[in-house]
Length: 318
Image: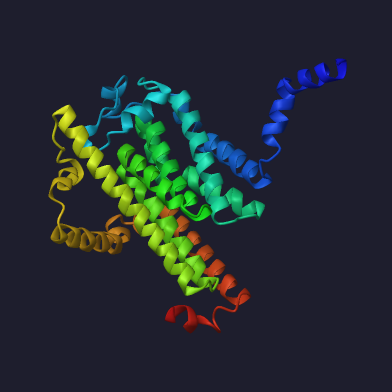
């Protein structure tokens, strides 16, 4: 009787519960999480412990982020998790944790096990220019990073579970409803997974099924987002803003889709030239050259080790 009581008491112990919960956490997850938080604090601590308002920040010291007119009908709920006040430290910590979880999902999605690679991926993710610039708009940082996390989660679900792409479409919809830009992360992750499947010589049928699931997930997510947006606009009695062409959602047609794809390709090609990467300053130029050299080295190393050069035509043919 006494032993049973002691056993039950032990199971209520905080340390016992923590050990139970952390027992199944992989070593790689811990590395990704800790490295993201540490590198994130080193990079963004100054912004997190100071209030540095910009042109928008002055008007958002307290704001409910109801941005339905921008197509972001979930943003107010995402930002509401840390309150509607501009609290850099709280929002910053919340955002770093969200990015850390995203990092864990990425290394799990691509089955990355090398410690150095995990740290590099986590570091790149938390210091990426998009993330750094979002800290300048810290009042929406928490919501935007949730959008990034949900976009990543959708792809993880699609590839880890047989019917995960159905649930994934829900998170695509939520991600779009918070901040539309991060759906591009989900699309890129899908493309990378397909490329890896081709390189690893997976059966054609299996790859085609992967592509079909990705397309269905994105299509359901976009349609769901559009329907909910229309409903919310009618409820709120507002119209879409002209900001960044958001109002073009009212005129979806094949010709508009064609022009959208055309402009996307054009912008992709012109981006490095328009942004003056090569003329900015010595640090930017040096950084880009080092990254380019590093990537070329890694690609050559990978091709030599896996003999892709010999079988290159096979991959191109596929």
